[in-house]
Picture 1 (cartoon, one colour):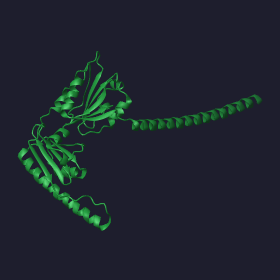
Picture 2 (picture 1 turned 180 degrees about the vertical axis):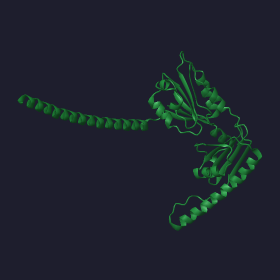
Picture 3 (picture 1 turned 30 degrees about the vertical axis):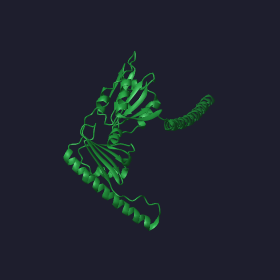
Picture 4 (picture 1 turned 45 degrees about the vertical axis):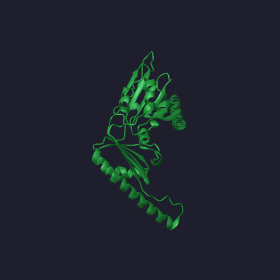
Length: 298
């Protein structure tokens, strides 16, 4: 009888110890989960901060003649092995969606982060030497048409050269309050038609109160009148030169948005960020600016 009682007490003691051990294990597991979540959060935070600190090694605009010289040098580059990566990325397309994971692992994470930062309307072309001697992106003047990648002993520049030599029918609008420009180039090389539109628009008012509100209303009326003159000239140019493949917009953002509403729906619209001052720039310089490419050193 005593033996049975001793065995029962041992079993109860073992059961209590098992419960205690399980509770301790669960407590440690919960602590490790919290620690893992904390470390994961800190790692994400460090990664985000690191990405925000990343900067391009350089950024420059390349005129049509400068980009041709650049491509001549780039296409002459040769490697003894197939380790030169070229990726054509249409607008809104990420590197991860195009390049196989095994190849993408050979590209630095910082480089991929910088590429993801580039949000361009025409897409980009990425040139990368897997030994990191060359790492840069070109944003062309016209949209990259298809996503494709190459890993060869040379960089694949032919599609970009075709993009740069496009003979599309192009309309350029540079819109500023009081001074605007319309140009039509039937071959994307020379303006066949140029129109400078000037209007009297009041300067911005710096004082407050009723006088400022009245002044701003009068200024808005001046700008609306100016835009009516722009679209009167534009309608005439479109009537004489349709169809148009691309419309390139530049200038004051509110006027660009107004133009987007009033333009025909058929042509593709490209907004250029370059700061073009109509009063200081002739048609030839405007065309050279909108046909320039942007180069990013990664």
